Structure formats: C-alpha cells, structure tokens
Length: 259
Ligand SMILES: N[C@@H]1[C@@H](O)[C@H](O)[C@@H](COP(=O)(O)O)O[C@@H]1O
Image (cartoon, rainbow, N blue to C red; front, top):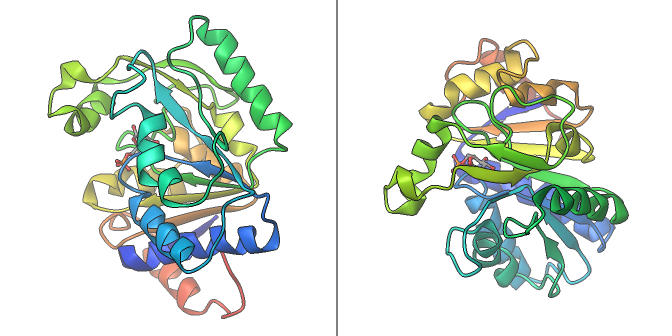
C-alpha cells in the first residue's frame, strides 16, 4: 500500500495522472467511479485534461454503488451525480457508464447482473474510492463480509447523517438502503486509488492503513490488495503513526515512478 500525504490539489493531479496514463496506454480502459465529495477534484482535473485532448471515447466505467428507490430524475441518484460530475464533462460514450440499478424490481437479480457486467468488461482497471468516517468504502458498512459481492445493504445512522448534507440537511430524506459493490468486488479491480481529505477522515485513514484487517473497518481489506494507493492531505493523515515515514518515502520517490 502506498500512502501519499500532499495538498489536495496535488492529490487530484496524481489520481488524474494515473487515469490518464491508463487511457493513453489503452483507450479501452475500464474505470471505477466513486461518488461523494472526495473524488470531485479528480473529476475536475480529468474534465480539464479532456479539454486539452484526453479522450474517454472508448473507455467504460462502473459505479461503486447506488441508493435504492430514488426516482430516476432525483439529483442525488448516483447515476445522475456521476453524469453531472464526470460523464457529461468528458466524451464517455452513451451507455459507457454502468451502475447498480436501485430501481430494479428484483434487486438481488440486478446485483448479480451488475457483477456479470463487470466481469464481462474484463474487470476494472483503476477504481477511484473515497472513505466514510466509519471506514466504509462504496457502501460497505462496518460488519460487511470481507468476501462480499454486489448486494443490498442497510446504511448506518452515521452514514445517513454524513450524507444528509446532500439531501437539504434532512437525514429522513436519505434512503435507508443501497446497492453496493462488495469488498471482494472492489478488491478485484487492478488498482485501487483512495482519496481522503479533512480531519473527519483521520481515524478512518489510520485504521485503513495501520489498523488490523477487520470487517469493523471495511476499508482495511485494502491492505491485502497488491496495488493500492492512499492519497491523503495533512488533516486526514494526522492520526497516522508512520506519517513521517510516508512523507519521506514520497519525497524520495523516483521521478519515473507513477502511482
Ligand atoms: N457511498 C459513498 C462512498 O463511496 C464515499 O466514499 C463516502 C465518503 O463520501 P465523501 O467523499 O463525500 O466524504 O460516502 C458515500 O456514502
């Protein structure tokens, strides 16, 4: 696991560099897109690079998760969020972005179909991730099976409170259920790039990088991934025991070596 501690704008550039490197090497790259505020600066950077000529025309993308039951035109439906924040700002082809269908009548069947779609695409090359204050990735809440695949989950009180800001500050408006890629689904991606900024993420980041692997902090499963990158600012890094070591390692990183 590589930990980079740097200002937020530099983190966004690093993540965008990794995406751009893949797209230039293979225009048919399969990206994994996350919602939440953490990846927004990366999407801004990718949109800027698209204006400078970076093409997503042959790429495909899979979303991490989706609320259950939000209407098709609800602005917080993750499909709509991803469309607004990244898909509409680059030249991803119509239909190139897929997500779990939170409006399906048969939710377990929709989850199985989503797993199959990811597999049929050859898997995700680079998965962008944020982290919840309770250590969730996608919507894999504490207690999630470390071997889980896409399924329905119940959101914790903490997550619904954290996400109420997207629903006019009303926790009651935040759906109680979601469909989410499982931890094993996420672990199947070939490169995981997690971004976290701000003090509210400091404990989750400490557990993710330095805690014991445990379903209580679902993101800790990333310690078992052969290519995981954790991009954090000073505030999110503030509880890391080995912060000085990660800073030194990044300062000494050879210029030719990407993420
Ligand atoms: N399902 C999303 C996650 O994918 C996201 O990583 C996390 C953190 O969100 P933020 O980046 O806004 O802090 O919470 C949400 O609930």
